[in-house]
Length: 344
Ligand code: SF4
Image (cartoon, rainbow, N blue to C red; front, side, top):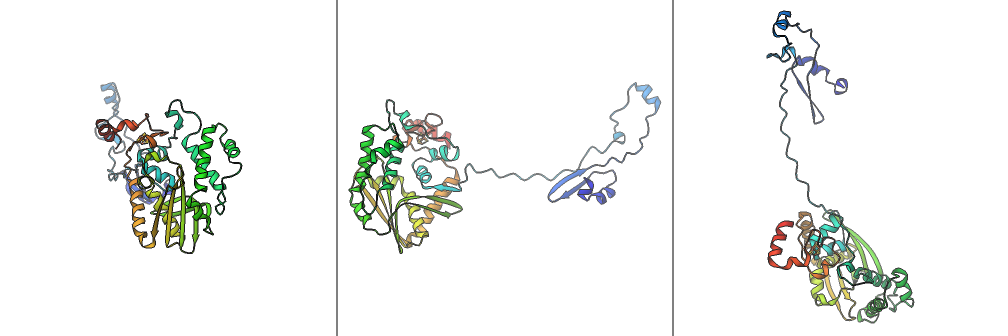
């Protein structure tokens, strides 16, 4: 060991004192026992005390008790609660709707509960399953000739065998709503419109990724369509987009700007109604503003300030509900005050 530490010279010069070695930032204190011949205690002393002196005041020839003080250790920085490195647009949307649920699912890893379980007596498909079936069917629709798939019912029954007739009709209604819409006629006239286009880009060290339901990118003009199966009981389409999908919308716009567009139109189509489309156009000169807003959101996630913002839609299926969060009951003022103090 001493050879590997190349310490022989230092030890030679150390005598009986401890010697501190530093190698590549690590410090080692060595004390050397040179096996000197000890002076045996006088036989009279042993006879007089009846016991050998184990701890003589001068050390009795033992090694020095005190080692040199090491320099104090620097305080370690507190690790961040959650450091985000990848963000899907659905994670961003979840963070916007309830940052506490985002933390429960995306940082802690709690799995969403079955939404049906929180609505006693409800059977059939969860809202997320209905949304999934609609998106899968719309992926099969020819954007240039938008018609519902002939085998729509068979397809949905294949994916979700327990689907009820009522749910099947609801799913078909969503698909018809797109196919019969003004928006579908517009998209049909876009020569390069494609369904389910993946995207990924990096911003502030975070990889943002996802899929666009429909993308038309021709020259420097881009059109993005996103289908939503939200109930419009939550608010007007404009209110829902403003409240829940601002960040998602700007991520779509940034993805298109990074792909070379200088103008991006993002259209949210709420399929409950054929005419419920919310369109926003972004231009290149808004890029700094959009990037700053995304940086702000990433900084908020990194800051670890996760707070519950309950409503009956977002709380349905939340894994934190009644486990670590009171959900809609937080709305009562005194409860909310107490709970917010607890979770922050
Ligand atoms: S129960 Fe509701 S308020 Fe609480 S974390 Fe879940 S979604 Fe947010």
